[in-house]
Length: 68
Image (tube, rainbow, N blue to C red; front, side):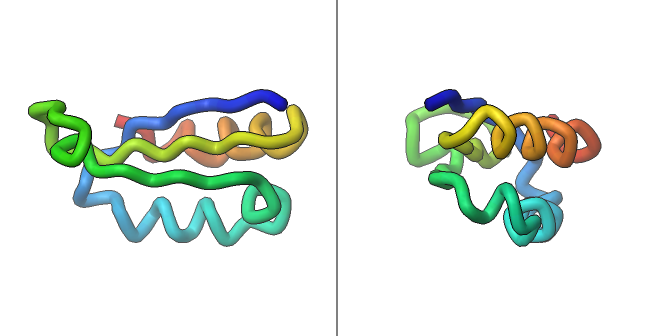
């Protein structure tokens, strides 16, 4: 299994939901955490996508537009 972690500005939270609704991406293991929950002093959300190489590559394509 492969994974990727994306950093997205909090104001783009609604855009995260659009990416996660993609058919291929939605079939992967998805974890989201606000930076503050990880004791990181940033106004961002971290999204971890773990699964097939094809699914993670698709997520990378979609997150390019909104990553911080």
